[in-house]
Image (cartoon, rainbow, N blue to C red):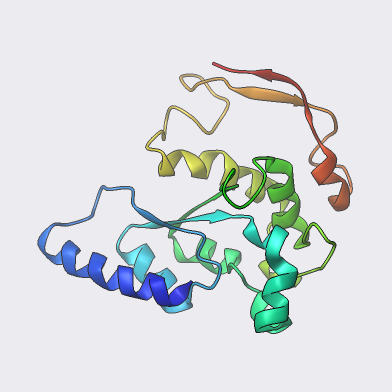
Length: 186
C-alpha cells in the first residue's frame, strides 16, 4: 500500500543520490493504493509499477473495509500510464490469484471483480489494446527483455496463442472465458 511505498521510495531516493538508479529496471509490486505523489516520484526515478489483478479477487473485501469510493482507483491505472512510470500487468500467480491472464484482462477493461462487482468508473478503465500491451510490450521492461519479447516482429521471440474467441470483439464479460486452443513458443 501507499504507506509502504513511501517508506521504500524514500530509501530509493537516498540511494539514488549516491548510486544513481538510472538504467536499472526496478519497480513496486501491486500498488493498489499508490498516491499521485508516489507515482510521480517513481516516474522521476525511472521506476515502474507491476500491477496484479488482486482486486479482481478481493475487490468486495476492499470495498467492505475502505469503501466504494476508495476502490475506484485501486490501482490508479490511468494515472500511472499518464505519469510516464513504467507499468505492466500480471497475475502474481500462484500466491494470491490464478495464473489465467484472461481474468486480469477482463478486470482491466471492465473493472469488475470475479463476483461481478463493478469497482471502477470509466475514467480508470483501459481499452483492450492497452490492457494487452500491459501484458506484453510493457511487461518486457520488467524482466529486462525489451527487444526480445513483447511484440510479434522480426528479431523477437515468436511466442503466440491462437484463441478460442476474438479478444477484441467478444462482450467484456466474455473475456474471462477465452482460452488458448494452440500455443506456439519460440
